[in-house]
Length: 99
Image (cartoon, rainbow, N blue to C red; front, side):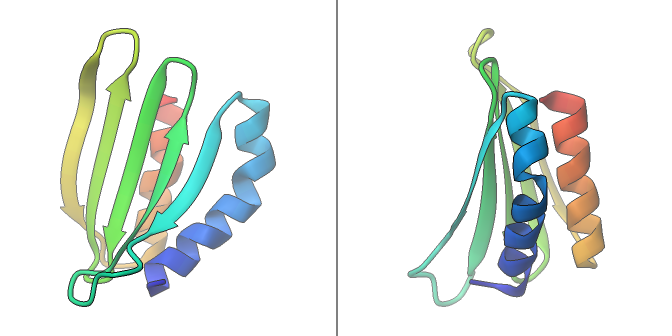
């Protein structure tokens, strides 16, 4: 697991009850086999939307939000995070804005 992955695991542990209260299910996954571009991601699902935040150890971030109802992607964004705090801000914003 990458440094960002450990940070995502900590975020998820802290937010699990809050997410469940909002009817959201979340899980952390990471690429166990990658040797070059190691990544970790959080998948968060609600009854109407699904979101993913993927972060590579390089700081590259990909955010994706899809709507089950509309059958389409609502957001796909690539960016680069310079710190763990920046990734956490993106993740908190994702939950508040889209889910």
